[in-house]
Image 1 (cartoon, rainbow, N blue to C red):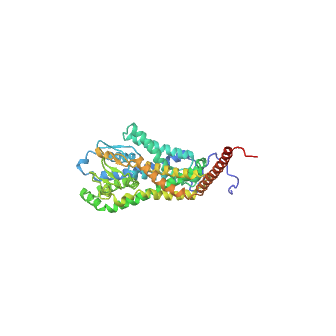
Image 2: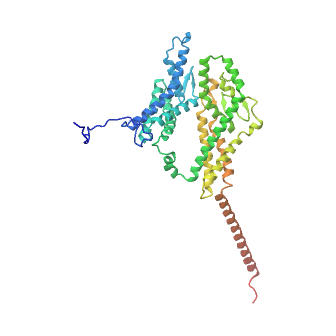
Image 3: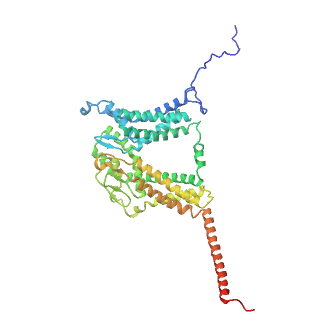
Length: 445
């Protein structure tokens, strides 16, 4: 009997298959039919698990490598996992206790790692919808709080874990979701807010972001210079420590975790106020007041007492140079309607750059141990004010004198003053003539 060519009856339920579309549509999840919120939550959990594993696997490897040591006979391998979890929480701003001393100095390198794993997971497996993004952020925050509770963190630490998860996870997951094929562009996403703000404020925000990014780049160059200049000191510290392969690897990973902190401190050095590594110390272009430091090779690259004064006093001039670049950006992008628009843009530039640098300094400061090591980092608000003042001055002297609207307003005001002065002189002449006629009395017929 030949096969039937009629219509195939519908059974009421279609077979679900995996979808491998290069550019999925906006409402399509990674697994056809799965709720978008579930896909978003799984992507966030995957990102958190990746960053945790990056820390846990080396910790367990170090435990296995040192298990033959009699001092580690009574230590379970789960202790290594707990140490890795505490480091992961520290990257989210949760202080940890080491030897009875609180350590709150955030390893920004691990923070960047956690944000990057969230970014990679969201870009690969996330769904760029409101429900997917909200579920991803909620799942990441819930997992962070759970890890904090398992590690025995107190109530304040749990709140810090929640806030840190929102900041770190929100940045990483948000950036990853925006790279999805179905995601809207960043310009379209911020368009409702941008359209509500004056054009001068929008241009100032962009120029302020440029100020912060340029200063971070300059600080990275300064850090590289310090590393080259202090390589001999670093080599001496490593030689005195006498580390084996495992210990050297652990130390190298730890120093890489705090390398971004050193870059942020270098930014404070460039700004002028400088930073401290221990109470009573100061590393600034004007002076270097050093003190006893832990035997950590990374600290060997800090400026020596002789690296102060002289030409280094001109280091804060970099702020003005960066402000000039921002002023050129304002001049090129802003089409002012009134002369004060330029002033508003420059003020917004200075405020934005100062606030961003202040946030960086707050993130890179904290306690690295007991006693004098409880003070590490820079005075965030002092550095932020220095950046706002220097960059604002550079932007002001560049954007305002070269702006046509400012020139027109100045000319108009000058002309108005001249017209006013001429009118006042004419009125004075008329009043003088009238006064002379009145003193002479009536003229003879």
